[in-house]
Picture 1 (cartoon, rainbow, N blue to C red):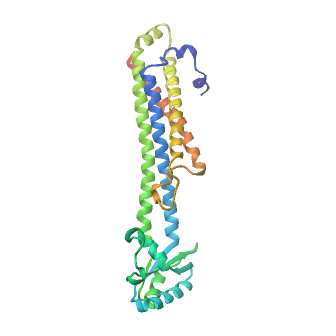
Picture 2: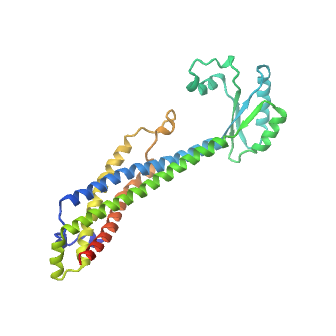
Picture 3: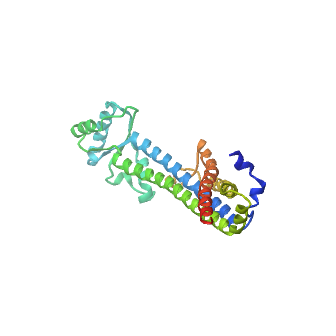
Length: 294
């Protein structure tokens, strides 16, 4: 590592400091680092989303009272008595007309006449840390409150969490593909630079320079170029993520794409990973090309 950072003034003269390959390496590293920041932000944000959906839906359930209007109040009271005596339930309360109107407002507008429509009475059930026996509660409700239907959100929670987990996996897969594409571009740039300096390499071999010495010069230059480009791309990506809208309950999953807390440390690893990819790709390309030029 010390040799890589310190370098060799004579060896550095082997690699042109400017040119097409230098610009390609820096641009590719910067662009890929910028994209990696967003892929990483997507993975971490969807992970938080999956955890939040799982926690919120796991603790909340809904009891729906579908009964004639003249029996609804009595069945609601009976259901609340059953819920209050059920182990594992922390709180249970019937939603007011205003709350039910607010739930339906996004679909039917703000002037929905809840009182005159046959809308079931909803009861919000919050369980404690131990949880309750859903099957046993359904049996009690079937016997004491015929119009009650319990929804423990299992059928809603599972597909939502699965979708969020797949998005998280897609984000990490994208990072892997970005790394592979970066390695491919840097490999082509290194091969082009070596081929363009074939005559200089031949002269160096005649005066006794070994392939490891020549390859080390190219590896060092391309690694440092990739490190610098990735650093610029990472900083720009972090600034772009910083100005994105923050998470809001009204917007749901459309906001909150970014880093929170100590997760801001993760993007700082991207320049080092970019340099490592460039080091491995250039080293392999250099040894293979020098062998072909022999």
